[in-house]
Structures are given as C-alpha cells and as structure tokens.
Image 1 (cartoon, rainbow, N blue to C red):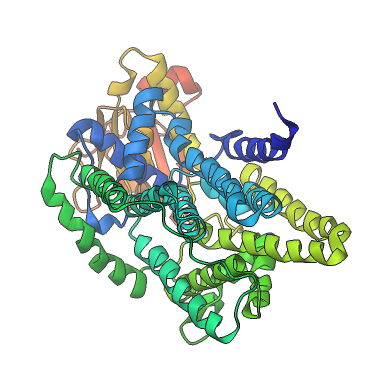
Image 2: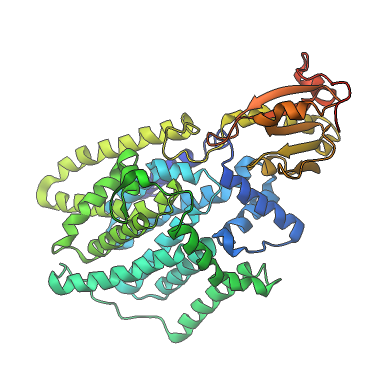
Length: 508
C-alpha cells in the first residue's frame, strides 16, 4: 500500500473513532426517540407513511429500519445510519481534492473530523448528517460539470439532489443557495474578475444520460415517498410540506434564539456557535472577505455559497443547534484556500502554527462535549437532551425484562406531557400504555407506573400494591417525574423496603 494515502486514512480513522467510540454513553435525545418510533412503526405497517407536517423525508427512517432489522433494537444500531453518513461526509470532503488540491481537501476533512458539531450530531440518530453528505455531493457534482463536464459529474449532481429531497424539506434552501451563488458569482465577475478563471468545460454527457440520471432520481424519490409504491397519495406531501415548514420556520416555533439578535431580521446565533465551538469554521468565515477581491474562481464561488447559506439560516427565526452542521463545511474549504495562498507567498512554515491551535481547540472541545458534558445543558449544543436520570427507570425495567421469560409482557403506565424517548426504549414491551392527563387509565396497579411529580400523591392513593418510588428528571426543560416499580415484580432485583405501601380502600 502506498504511503501517499496515509494522511487520508488517518483522517478517516480519527473520524470513525470519534463518532463510534462509546456511542451508547449518551441517552437517546427526544428527536432520536421519535425517529426510532417511526422506524418501529414500519415493522407494523410495512412501510413509512410520509407525513408532510413532520418536515423530514423518509430516507433516514428506512435506514434506521434496516439497521435495526439487521442488528436488533440497540441504541448503537439506531444511531448507526447517522454515524455512517457523518463518516462518509468526511470522505466526501477528501474527494474534493479533484478541485481544490490535496492540501485544502485534507485540511477541510480534518477540520470536519474534529469538529465538535459534526461529532456530536453525527452520534445522534437525526437527519442532519445525511443532509451534509448530499450537500457536499451536489457541490462536488456541480464543480465537476463546471470543470470537467463528465458523465460521472452529472450522476453525482442527480444523486445529491435526490438525496437532499429524500432527507429534509430544507433541500429547497440549499439548492436555492447554490443557484443564487452562481448568479452572485457571475455579477462579481463583471465587477472584479477572478484569476485564474475556470472556463465552462465541454460537456461529455448526452441527452440520454441526463434522462437516465433524472429518471433514476425521480424513481427513487417516488419509491420512498410513496411508501415503496404502496400509497401514491403520499406523494402530495412533497409540496404540502412547505406550507407547514414555512409556518414553523417563519412564524412562532418555540426554537427562536432572540438572545443573539442585534438588529433587524439578522440573527447571529450561528456565528456565536462558531465562536463557542468551531474556530476553524469561524476563521474560514472571516477569510471569505479575501474573495471579495480578485481571486481564485473556485474559492470565490465557495465563499459566496458559504456566506449565502449562513445568511439564509440566520434570517430564518427557527433555530435548533444541530442545523449548524449544514452551515459550517464551506468555511473549512475557504480556510484551506487562504492558507494555500499564504504558503505560495513564502509563509509556508507559518501555516502549521496557524492551523494547529485551531484544530487542537476543536479536538479538546469535541472530547469534552462528546465524552464528558454530553448532557450538560450549559453547553449550547446540548439542546432538549435527555438526562442520565432516565436510566433510573430504564435500567431496572429492561434488566427485569431480559431476565424473566415473560419480561416483555410487563404492564406499564406512562402519563407524562412529553415522554419521548421512552416509547423507543420500551418498544419491545407489549403492554405499555401512554396516557394524557385528561384520559387517565382506569386501573393503576401496573408493574411500573410513571407520572409527573405533581401528580405523585394522587397516584399513590390509587395503588393497592407495594411500590418502589424512584424520582427522576427526563430532561432539563421538564418538571421532575416519578417512577413506581412494583415490589411484587422488582423486589428480587431492587431489594430493600418499598417506599409505597398499599392504602386501605384505595380508589380504582
């Protein structure tokens, strides 16, 4: 094996290690629980019934379903598809060497491999890692059509577009930004031409190739959105989703970050996150100023794309921190471009001194966040995160279920305003019911009961059996809850004296 591939292999190995090591130490996030539940429903229904108000395409759900079918309902299996997509994103950055050179692509890929955001959300079973992967593939394909005009570039573009559409409704934003970046680049060329100027390559593909690429992409989109050709009525969700998306993204959503507003509609939340965690990307953002002036064509276009995408995400009021991964990656390329110019100007020996602190800070922050502070709500990336407290409920229930022959027939009652990710943790149980306050169960003596702490006294008065009482907090934004585990079932596992003894004449 040639040593020339060693840097790429080392970068990829680092990316794999940081995304896979101790993958189960973090409890499932609220959204992970919902995504896992959707995948579980596919076992019942036979396909994913696309809901346009869910704002996410079907691809991730099918990937999770496949992973859980192959490897079982394990936390690592639930997260495996997103991990793979995150790792492949690093590979896609390395493949950009065709257009930006080895040094730039390696730096960009290493920055992504060490990024606190790409690691943290690459260890989540959510859609964003797929969106990053397909965005880079589309970018790669567009540059390929521009520079080489090959048939492969055409199919890469088709793959990127289809993947984005299958992933998340924000595909319209990313594709729009790429188109507007071309228009902006063209205007800037009239004012301040780039040097050297990339001419448009002679296209080597034929009409039949375009029809094949477009036809295959359309077929894949229809296949997944129609529930594997089982319900073509679901295809209407492809356009209906935008009505819901605009309502959530533009109007009140509960995810606004007004703390970072400075003036008008512009919001600096993403820049704040870069300053807090993503120093290489922040330096890349600052370096975009270089490409206002006569500069390399490919880097100027990338700077326009990165700045335009950041601007679009900044204007939209809806902001959840995991969206930052869709903003960062172009700035890694820009940082590499500026450092490349410095190297060419004779300052090569200073590049390592400039880059090492940035990457070192990323690595330290990534390790702290992903392996020590992954539930610390003082970390901005830790958002609506389930706390380790949930294990006070899940560990004994799952341990008993695996120990007893009929363990997964335990009867459970869960009455919380917000209870995800519990439905995924208890997805193998056949007799667990989820209730709202206005429709409580008629029989309270179950094997385990979970209620909000404010309802504890009222609940305890209805018990006829003895119970262990275990307080816990599901997430920081939620009031404390209480779990009651039946002494009859859990006595041998927990030991000691149950805190709740039966009350004479307890109500049903």
